[in-house]
Amino acid sequence: MRSLFTRPASARLLLAAASFTVAAPALAQAPPSLSDTIHLASGDIWSEKSTPTVLGTPANSAASEVAIVPVAENESALLSVGAIDSTCNTCNGGGGGGAGSFYNRCGCDQPMFPYLTGPGNCDNWCVGPHWNVEVDGMALRRTGVDWGGVVALANGDGFATAMLDDFGYGPGARIFATAYNDSDFGLQIGYEGINNYNATALFIDPNGGVGPEDDDVRSFNYQTTFNSLEFNVMRRTTAPTKIFAGFRYVQVDEDFSDSITQAKTVPGAANPATTVAYADTRDLAKVENRMIGFQLGALRDAWAFNKWLTIEPFGNGGVYYNNYKREDLQDTVNTLVTGPDSATLALASSSSSFTQFGTSNNFSEISFLGEIGVTAVFRVNKCVAIRGGYQALVMDGVGTGIDAYFSPGLNGETVLYHGARFGVEYQR
Image 1 (tube, rainbow, N blue to C red):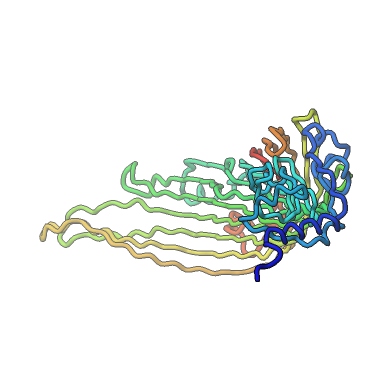
Image 2 (cartoon, rainbow, N blue to C red):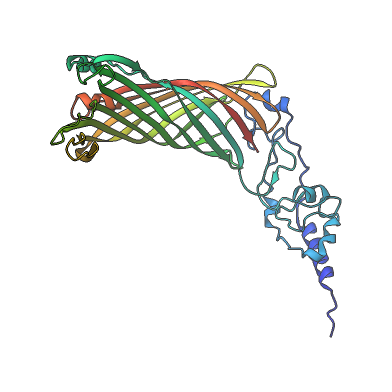
């Protein structure tokens, strides 16, 4: 026997029943204008709880008890029924005008779950956070190298100074992403790092070879990298200054090497052939600072010059446990150069071998890290902004490569990074 009700009819009855049991739908609320977001007294751009009459749409708890009735694809025409808003259908991926998407998680103008509204077109989410993403390129200068001890050492061994090159600006990146839920709590993940710091000191021994172009060379090479990963928790409030706290891991690697390369010449023809031995050496100090700790900081959302340009300062500091590791390596390359044999007419030849010896030690140290900065933000539209600023980061209790070369153990030093950054900001 054919069922009394067809499937489309049953779906219509269920939708009608739901519409009678749900409280009156909340009025749709448009995202704030750009001038509104800039001139809020609190400086907040998003705040569901603090300013519900201006920003976002609060949760509809009464509607959360409504059962969501799936609508089959072939019954998408049901979405044109008055209980479903055609504008919402457009935001959910449909074509609007009553022919929108048949996936209706939120209930459109009948919110089934707490949800947030964002700045962009159709930023009306059932669940999920607001996102704020900052991507900056950085150029930071590191504390310079004190070459005084190196020059005294090399000159004392008969080498004349040829070049002293300090650290320049190292290129790097800074990427921060923050997600806020409907209760204004935010989780932030951030990375910043620079991996291209190089400094060199070069010395020549004019008496180390046969001719003016055959001088022994002594070079000191200093390389260092800086990488940081942090996780912070913060909350948006009506106060202009926001407090955040979290954990941070910082790794600073430093390699300092002292290399002596002997000038090599080919002996003249002889019977028997003449062989000359050379030894090129390298002393290498490798340092790893692995710091993990808790940090506390503060930032101010915005100081508005006008509706387009704002200034945003920040600062943080923390105490870290530094698991310091150092390796001391000695490399030797032995080379044998054999001249031609006048009797057998054998040509000149050479051979070499490599050996390495080393030791490794671990130490513990308490380190401090502090960071401050200020950023100017030019807002292109509600979602995109261009940013540029200056920041400084200081670390105390850090093992450095040049100190490890001259001294055993761990002698904590103070290292400063500072420079400019420039990038973009995106929020939804």
